[in-house]
Image (cartoon, rainbow, N blue to C red; front, side):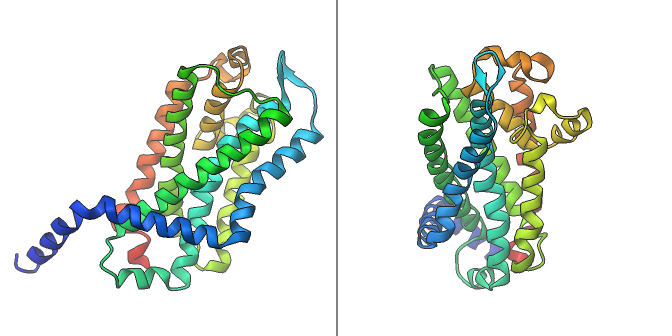
Length: 275
């Protein structure tokens, strides 16, 4: 009883200040990200480069009024969320664990929750910028139309939030798998690349083999990409999707379930306590 009382008192003092600490940590994360110019440029430029490569190499319509470039641009918006959340956090946190940053943070009065909130703030900031960059490029060059109604913008908002939530917590949890900073990219990047190929980002999802679609349907990127197509492509294209509809309720459930799954390892204070 006596040993747990100081801990409970310390936590009660920290909790009211947690949003402020998380916001402050988020500001630090964003400034650190901006200072790494090469990483920042690559993060924002990579989806645009892929957009130009695939958009220029594959021409023609895949359905009446829908070109492959429009289809691909909608998928890259979903993929950009995964790159900014899952991939960047899984690699970045593994590097911070390996170079001793997390050990130094454990010696500070900042609670682990504030560290995670800071990472969420970084993901939100980078994802919004990346979305804006993709729209600036995809709209004039690849014919991607902006959502034409408030309903579609609301749909985009909840897809964006759920996608960020799932990608962020899964990225934090997955960051404990790489054993070192050197292996982080090799352990994380192939997962994202494979999911991009089987989730309807680089290829039209309905044209993939059935077994590949079944595997992709277990993971959030397929559902996030399909949801983004429902925002940026005409409603007539829904008939081309599996099941003949956008499957928005299923999308919300899958993304929410993966967000909860990603939270489970965080109850063990991963990765700070593993440092």
